[in-house]
Figure 1 (cartoon, rainbow, N blue to C red):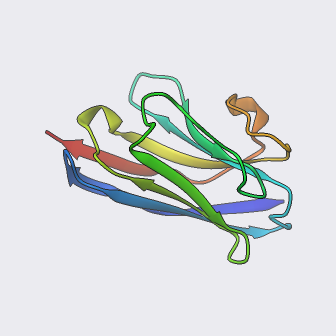
Figure 2 (figure 1 turned 45 degrees about the vertical axis):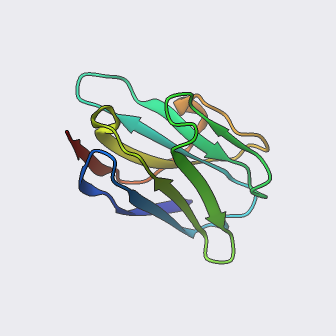
Length: 124
């Protein structure tokens, strides 16, 4: 069992930055690809970015390329999402998730463990 605890998020003006963290505990973090998803009211949960266990490969949704950066520190069992140049359309609840896969997957059902979610609100 992997427990994921998120921190960060909040309210920021358009153009600002936020960093989300996701700390894993319980069963070993080893071997899990990690992803960030977001869900706005009335919409489905959508893939934002993912990273392989080694950190050697990442995959970004087109909407966040060049603005968001995912990273992980396996020694700390933590994955980060740095969000820059935030836009009002980035407003959503953000979730980190762990997938027992070698590659990054973009489908939510492939992720077996989820964080509790954290709200990001970008004002115009």
